[in-house]
Structures are given as C-alpha cells and as structure tokens.
Image (tube, rainbow, N blue to C red):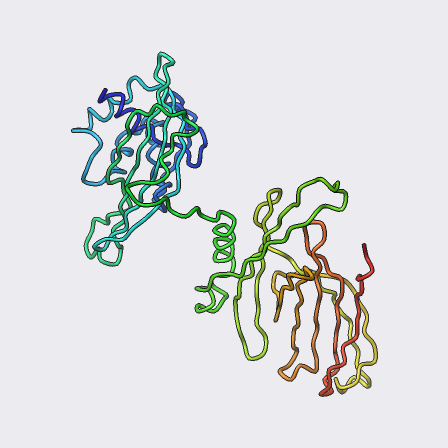
Length: 350
C-alpha cells in the first residue's frame, strides 16, 4: 500500500487544472520545466523531472521533509506506475512567521503497468519563505512541504476536495481578471504611476446578442477591464482590456484619424484654415476616458492644453463583440473657446 500511495503522491501533476499528465514512460518527449514562480509551477516542475527520469531534480523540489525515507526508496516508488491524470482545486494560502503556505486540493487517477486505475485525493502544502529575511545562502525557494493522498471511492471527475483543512473553500480566482492584470503589468508596469498600478481595475460586464442571433439564442458576454495608468496636469491615461469566450483577453485598441491641420497665415493657431483626414491609426491609450454602461460607449477627451480650448475626442460604440469608432471631434483652434468640429461621424451605421 505504501508503494501505491507513494506512486500516487509522486504522480500528482504534470499539468494543472485538469490537463492529463504525461506517462512516466514518455521520458524522451517530456518537456523540461523548472519553474518556482508559484505552487502550481513547482508541482509541474516536479513531474517534469519525474517524467524525464531526472529523480535528483524531483527530490530537490521538496524541503526538509522528504516524500520517502531516502532517495533510493523515492526512485523505486515509481517502478509500477504507467500514467496518471490529475485535477486540482482552488489554491488557498496563509501567512505564518515569515512564510507563506499554499494548500492545493488534488485528485489523481493513477494507472499501473497492468492497466489498473485507482483514484486518490488529498492536499499538498508548499512553503515560501520570505526572501527579504533570508540573509545568507543557500537561498530557500518555494518548495513542497508535505503531501497526503488517500484512496478515494469517488469518481475521478468528482474527487477533488472542496478545500484543504476545515475552513471553507477559497474563493474561485477570476482567471480573465488575473490574465488582464498580468498583461497590463507586463506591458505598462514601467510606464504607469506606481500608486495607480496598485489599484484594482474597474470591471464591466456587457451582455449582447450577435447581429444574426435568433431570439431564443442565449446572450453572449464580453467583460471590460479599465486600468488607470498615469495622471498629469490635465490628462489622465488609461488602458482597457476585453475578455470573451472566443478571443480570451485582449487589449482594446482605439482608432483615431490622422489630421492635416492648417492655420490662417501659418503664424497663429487661433484660427483654423482647413482640416483634412489623411489616414487612421490605432493606439492602446485612452485619455480622460469614461465607459457608459447604459450606452455601451467609451469616450475619450484629449486636452491639447490645460484650458481645454484645443482638444480631440472620440466615441467608441460596442457592437457585435467589439468597440468601433463612431464619432471623432477636433477643436484645433487655440482661441480660448470650446468649438469642436466633427470630422468622423458613423453614428448612422447599423
């Protein structure tokens, strides 16, 4: 029984969130993964090593508490295992004495070399010691602290424990929100104001039907994430991300016309002689923007100087799963008055 439990523990996960793990015999094709960025990543790395038969590397993902009495016993624990499937639940964490402990609910269906499959369920605990309090080498990275899997009579699809310990299940992570946050920080983390980077984005849900949808068809949903990035004297810049089931998370791009603006006598910008559109471009920035959840529009207003008498502004309407430019106004005269002219008007489009 110990060998079966050890094999089930060892074959916890080559993949997270229900993906099938590679068989132990697939070593030549198993990818090399060595990632300690999260509890799930450490588990993936452990089973990358196991499936590549790199048992010394696998042993190294554990902390002081090892999964077997010695290394040879650890290696022998995989002799009878052919393949495994894994499902994980929501990871919870808690802080204690300079460390963070991560609890990972898991269910495993392990198949031995005779084709017999058994289901095991339980929890793994991983520990991350605060890097700032580690004053001397060797550095102690996030590692597996302990794991306990027991045979389960539940169907594999239903065997994942709802939580680890006696507490309630942790709240489910908003995968789209987390992906949008990561994309925003990766792209704009060094360009935005630090105090704004710490803020949570505004989140909107847009439900709609496609233009060719039937009345009985269910509504589709697009989610909109509004991140504030920077605030200057009179302009605030934001970034938007959208998410839906088809396209995933993508940054919203705003179409703007490129203008050829000419002034009377060319020696003053108070009076405009002519304005012409010479092309269009897109930008990921939205200046002084606002989303109207009733009209399903994003508006922008870019002040060319503080008094706002010279400016450009756009209106972007949500239609069929995306935002498109429907109106663009330009006030090119620095005359102390607000007198914009509409240069793009697609408001009559269906």
